[in-house]
Length: 274
Image (cartoon, rainbow, N blue to C red; front, side, top):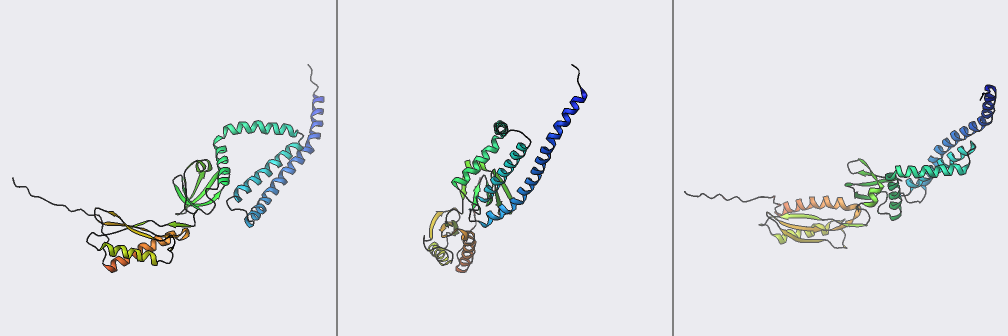
């Protein structure tokens, strides 16, 4: 079969002339659209921050909106090139199945993120303990949750693990019980020690009257008597109450002559005559 080079060149030139305007138009739309999405993202973020939407949902919603806009832009650009939309959807469907099989872990994280937003085991600003991490929730995204620890480290936890694991939420309830243990020596007046502990917690300004604080002798230890001290306070006052009561007990016990013993053992030596 003889090939007519001139005819082939003429066909290619005609096709190029017909396709070039569409390609250039699609390229211009892609560039302008991408820039508009970048600019729009700032306004979307600003709008979400000023709205009354729950802070927990805002980062998730922002990401979904941006991804949706980018997908719509790409579909529009491909349509401008003359490719049928039905073909695009078919290709996206086939690609989605392949990607879904390859990214099962990411899809699990996505499902976990949606589950977290629906069930709401925690929200942004809550102090939680999960997956061996203790800190404050900074952001809940589609695939991951960002937690800032108390030593200022940011830990990124996959949402799949969070949604399927145990979570301790320290901020969920408005009040918390502060569990503390104090000791006194066996030679001290334990009733006086108990009375002093009761006075300290009852007179603390951040300790709640209802529920009433509880002080009781918990254990007869090897070297000391152990008292359980159980006051209640607002959740945000927990560590303030914890530290201030410890300081107050040390000062008051020293002033009243109540000892705070350390672990000790009595060793008896026996001389055996031969």
